[in-house]
Length: 380
Image (cartoon, rainbow, N blue to C red; front, side):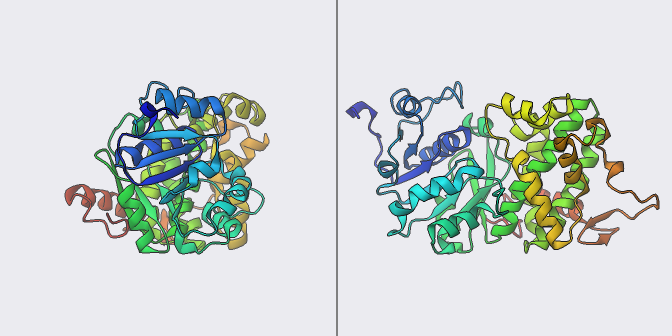
């Protein structure tokens, strides 16, 4: 590496494993927050472009990267001396990548941060569980980052927030202090289950929204699915041990809104292609990046079955993926086969007043009014 490519600031070194759009964007967040960031990229030409040109033209076209970001194809070089390690690889290849990482980190106690939003298809494990299992590390070292985080918007330095979750408040706070700058703010909580499943489940609802968008249905249909989808997300996550408040925060409702409404969302795009009549394999071929929701549908439904949670919207997404349902038939009125009028259950078998949506909107209002201090769960 030539002298001109060396980081200008001697900030603490952090490593990011994976140089796709989100990994590179998070590397930029960290660098803009004062860290010296070393990315690990699989392809030599990508590592060279990040290091020499401060660009990642394949995944973040038009974005200039900080001079304190470099990249390498040498995993040991990337991880050596890093105070924190961020993991941003496709969820279905995480186990394979961790096998290479293990000998490089097993003698350390550095925090390991998952930037991934998926569940392992073969096991149904969350990403933090895969990290703990493969690396054999203390779960207190593991943190997860989630929230309404569309990569390109953040790379363009549009203000946003995320939540960092860890069983250890100290780990969450250490990561949150590093992952913040003038346009990116990190909150913390200790509900890893809720934070991870919020990031997973909103992808499935976003695929459903994409499907109805591709079909040509309007805002009423999409609003109905988003609202009922939040109920499915909350029911599922709480049954798995999550706190319901987490699904009303950045990792739940916040991420759901951003992912469902934006054409930048890969899951929304995948759903839109399905709604336009493309088959599953055609969608996978057309997508240049991984849409985690497509791989997560089957394992999430299996987990839901194990805990007795009904997820009719997600089930319809699976039927469209399997080719057993016409995309035009996916709609909120099909979420029940019972002709008997039902109460609008909004959360955890509760009907009527209150409910997830009203409390979530009040929560958002409190956060804006108090500059984040009104939040009961996610706290800065």
